[in-house]
Image (cartoon, rainbow over all chains, first blue to last red; front, side, top):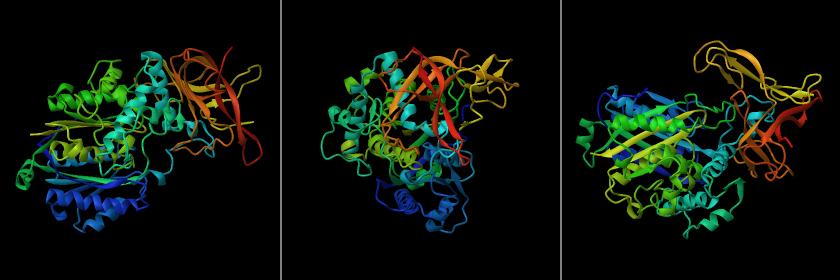
Length: 383
Length: 135
């Protein structure tokens, strides 16, 4: 199942439009992110051999229209949609286009506005059917209540993860939620209850935004200069059968999917969790980040709570997670979210993250889960 | 009375007091599934239609207070509960629960019941299924 890459691939440029509720058309934000990534790379658009657009709510051919704004070069433009993992999958397609020799330079561009999207595909009548009441908030909240039952995790632990990510975002100019004060556990717990035990400050920020990345072959990357940021693993999976498999109302596949995809990525990179300096995950709710500590192998099963208490996953800790604020506070527009993770990781590996810099960062992992059944893991390394 | 999702469940038959879920059984793998599968997703062998339920054990639950990213208005109900219930056949079903969060604990026995959600174009009462705790 493990994907292979025929030749080495490097991230040569990244760009973003800030996330938030700004009332700007998603395609306009996409243009800004795309040009920003091109400028960052020092690449003119005609050199881009393939463009992979990631959006969920843009409508038919929205990606092609953004490409027309970037330039009529005749390049192949492909729309990728994989729910929350859309941007990660678009990035993976760009990586494999270069790895497989199709092109020397490829671009992944995500743009979206979560507030303007319809719901997931449903089969019920008039929005009254069984699937219409299975919201993401409910699905992940059930992960949380089961975790509380099995491991004894407290609501304060969930709040501490959310507060950490809110505070990470305070230093990120691209983040949707930038608090003007240190966010506390008490403040997170006091916010509106969404779906027990998750409050509104624990739920991901839904808004608009855009992000882009440009990947290139080794020859091109060396010509462009700058730090060499290599994509040492690019893996994607759907689900396999597990005990207690939920087919209807399962927002994402079984948690095992993350463990399996990460194992593929570690094998491909020849690395393990101890080699990582920072991690970005699909922290739509704090229960997710907590279980991903374990599923990604950062700690043993049932030991994730200790990492929160000791601050090991905070900036300045042993293995910081969601260094840009994560979905919780950087935001989760949809298509660009996974590419924002790539943006953050590249900035960190370039040692250009300012106040939120992870000292000596050399290797970063990006994980995204998508509704339906998608898991994408990339590992980037400064080589 | 009309089911909202006739491919997912059926109304109680004569002599029954609870609805049943419409699932599949794969003889080769010995696995049950819900909703119905076109073939066994594990062994890729044929499945046959079976009925599942009406009772099981509560595996996980939550209570939704805000319809975030959803289409259903809570109106003046104050929200609703959702749970995952393990059926004896090895199937985990995710469905709304009757009641409030003081009414159950993980491990409780739950059973299917009907819940009215409005009327269809012909004026027939539309019903969906939920689980309620067995006392």
